[in-house]
Amino acid sequence: MIIQSIDDCLALLRRGDYVGHRSLATTLFLALRMERPLFLEGEAGVGKTEVAKVLSEVLGRPLFRLQCYDGLDQASALYDWNYQGQMVEIRLAEARGETHSKELSQSVFSERFLIKRPLLQALEADGEGPGILLIDELDRSDEPFEAFLLELLSDFQVTIPEIGRVNASHTPIVIITSNRTREVHDAVKRRCLYHWVDYPDVKRERQILDLKAPGIGERLADQVVAFVRELRSLDLYKPPGISETIDWANALHLISQLELNQEGVDSTLGVLLKYQDDISRIRGSEVSQILQSIELGNENIKEP
Image 1: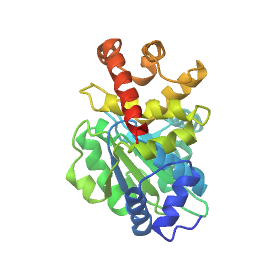
Image 2: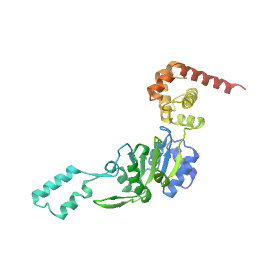
Image 3: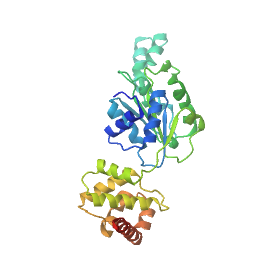
Image 4: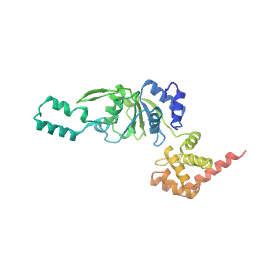
């Protein structure tokens, strides 16, 4: 698929069943044409990671995913050495009396013993086009790892001391996501195009349910969207994201719920909310009040 306009980006997202706002398609289009990383920030579960998956699926390009965490280092992100294989090679060389040869050093630190991690895999991806590099939840890593990323994001090259500089055969399509659990350094953001991914409005969230939970009826879908939006307006530890909305809608369908009721909601809150404090606060009277509010809202809409 050739991307020549913002509308092409919107069509690409739709082909992957992703209901995105035009502003996201605009930033994505610019990132693709300018060959710049795309930095997506927003609450957990709003669909940031899904953008990279859709690009990989629709464009037919390999996806290289680096899941970030505290303590992530080059050995896990870029490359490591197969130390056991190297030891076997050294022992075999000792048996042949070749322990001091230059050839042994070159053999031990050759690509034969190089374990390529996602960053290196993305740079060396072959084929007709670039791969998709997803650096997921960068905010979970620490600042030294961000500093290491700067060379990659600036020039799409990395240096391996034992081998040398590795340049990208094709500039990879880089998607970086952050849940904003901490601020990512400005030096990283300056090398990217930035987009904040917010919760969808009512219309888009209904469209998402039509695509991702097609088995539920219109009434239940409307109620699910309204209920979730009410929850997001509360001061919860972790408000439900889009992924939780989809899971909840499908769960309600599996237990044959045609519309929301107190028992059905109370018994499935664990699909929607992931912290016991939130569940305890909502279950019971709060659920009842939200259901009454939804029903009252529907009645007001029906009035001429």
